[in-house]
Image (tube, rainbow, N blue to C red; front, side):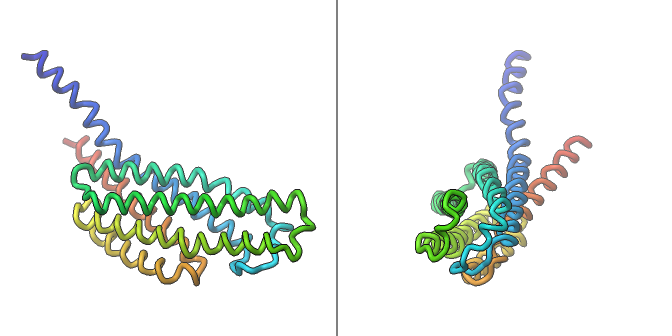
Length: 231
């Protein structure tokens, strides 16, 4: 009898440990994503003019800083994928299939388009380093610059707004985070949908909201671990 009990406890132990680690992993991944993306967007905001039809003078003065910002994007992307994965794991059987599909699809579309935009800017820097004289009056440069602006402001962050709406809806119904954060997510998503094409700083809304969600999950997890230790 004791052997059976020990075996049962042993089989449950990895599951219990996984459940305890998952929220903290989500929080850490979300915080890493938020910090890296905010840093990358801030460096790009300081270096590259917001006008998509600008002449590209930043290639002469700020190419190194922009390249450093672009190197942060893939790491932020990996952290964002981890954040999505562990949030879905935390939802578990409570996850609705419809919202789960939109939640996962919008997050991956946002991530893919962000990578495409970063690759386009990186290609501009590489092309300029080989042929700096070709920038003047280049239709290719104008196209690449306008393409990057559109895919980030019009498409990628519209998908980010959809991601926030579905995540907030899941949170509202399953209560895996406070409802006030879900309502805030709805407001931030609406702002992104209508303002991301007009205000550069609107792009900071998504990482700021993810940082809030992640901080709440981490605090809740640490508080729960503290209560378990007291017991």
